[in-house]
Length: 95
Image (cartoon, rainbow, N blue to C red; front, side):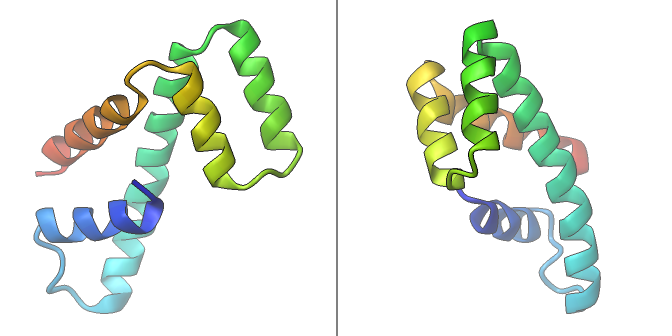
């Protein structure tokens, strides 16, 4: 799930779609920052030290976000489910 899909889901499921666009954008920025930090922390906890070092090298090399996601999927069993769990927990906290 990419960042745009996550944001649309948050707006729809939290009932924020009717807010003015500027308020939506403001809330989305804040929520997305928090959610991405949580996802990052969860994924880093699942990687061993070698995996974290490999991830850092990839990130520093300027690869596309899709390549980082593929790396994480290859290293973390159930990666997609992990992301969905973090998103679901975040949404339930916001509701």
